[in-house]
Length: 440
Ligand code: GDP
Ligand code: IMO
Ligand code: MG
Image (cartoon, rainbow, N blue to C red; front, side, top):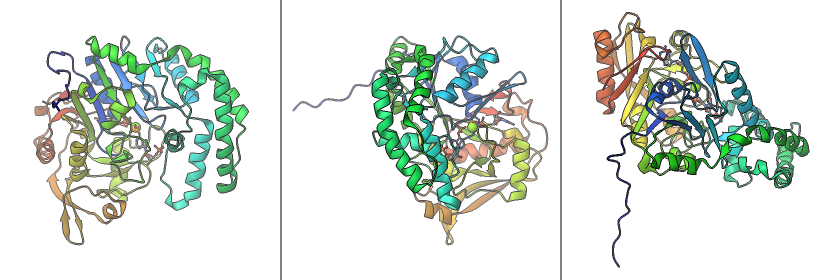
């Protein structure tokens, strides 16, 4: 039999590059700021997974915007924004988000396109998320309570409802009635919580359906058409690699594919379209919710960084746990995603520390571990091995090139770059859109 080779469309000559932005740590790395900055270079910004658990902050001209489901490129008039099929769409939260953007003077309706294949986040998903966390007690995950886990569970269990189902009202009602029977069984008998009324849920949701109908489309066709005609996209990830359901610190993760594989399944485009894959990392590490965190600082230091870096959740307001940069975890994220560059944020926050630590390996029972472990138990046993470097003084928020940074800060960045073997492509030194410079 004649051998065939799979043909990849040639990348050369395509001109404009497609970009992916992925969290390289446990979320909140400053992805939205980077998306906002790089939106200038693309025609379309598309979210590929997660839902309203994301809290994506963009600061421009003293104004702060926090996006949950709407892509962070929306402030750039003239660019289109897509909510892909991999997102679990909460229509109530979406309409609220759209309304507050319109109030702030941002045009949304003619620029936002929502996948007809995205699964709907239903009111009972939120109830089940909350109930499950209460039931788990001290073993809770520390979710954002937005119903994300239960919505993805239904998708995988093949009892979910898609945006397209909104427009088949009798099918929608029948399905919700069936599903709610089971949900109520769990709510009442297992969790001891109040049940829901299926018809009330349907009536509430069917009232919302016409409001989003003009935005609904087959986004896979839309993106394919645009890509083929030479337009380019930026795929915006939510959460981060260490919260990815496959590669994160399971079970203390979210329920979606936050890493690079999620782009193809969450947008319906082949991986050959992806050119630049950027990982966004903080110059230190944070995590919200429960779960192992080997380089976590002691509470006094953590509070110091939390205060300086404003480390409070953009969705829930919860204080974020703070730690030193974890190069074992960062190298792992680089490998899993094939990052072509790192976008490093919050370097400014580390000023005025006498010593800065970098976690360069772990130790388990006296043995050095250089790879990020697969299991929760193994990771929980890991103790950080630190390299200490001299800190620096000075306000970095006005730096516009590498040479504006103090020598110690440059040394810190060099050490990081050398260790992970991926270029630090952009350096961010403050929350504002303007506080950033390209490095390589
Ligand atoms: P995301 O979820 O990854 O988009 O990040 P969040 O918006 O949840 O959290 C990042 C926070 O850091 C936001 O408050 C940003 O405004 C802020 N931020 C982003 N880059 C920088 C930076 O370089 N320096 C400082 N000080 N703050 C930054
Ligand atoms: P962005 O996109 C940081 C965390 C929660 C919890 C776990 C599971 O802003 O970076 P979930 O509600 O998804 O079931 O919660 O994941 N988490 C995030 N942490 N940033 C996020 O999003 C997060 N989204 C979820 O705190 O530990
Ligand atoms: Mg966030």
